[in-house]
Image (tube, rainbow, N blue to C red):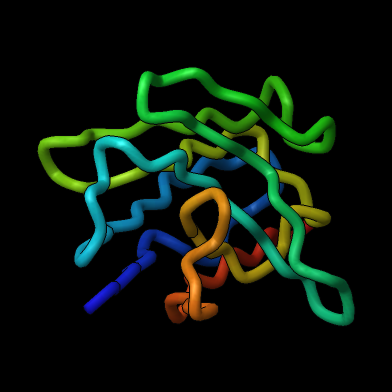
Length: 116
């Protein structure tokens, strides 16, 4: 049974930092490309960071230079270090595999709120 559990979200001031975690179970984590997504109120879910099983990373332009994705295969965990947060980063953050788990499955997400 697949399970993705995101955590680490909080209310922070602009310019602050957060580290999100996502623990995966029910998948062979080490071979899966993992992604972080976010969904802001009234907007579609968007992918913001990708990391392959070998550790190659890619970022959306909106977070490049501020966010860092990493993974610990021994802990089946993917992380998102977020620095210099901006109010427009406010969203619910999710992780998933690439391609997303099928049948469609999403964890509960973790709320990040950035105040100005």
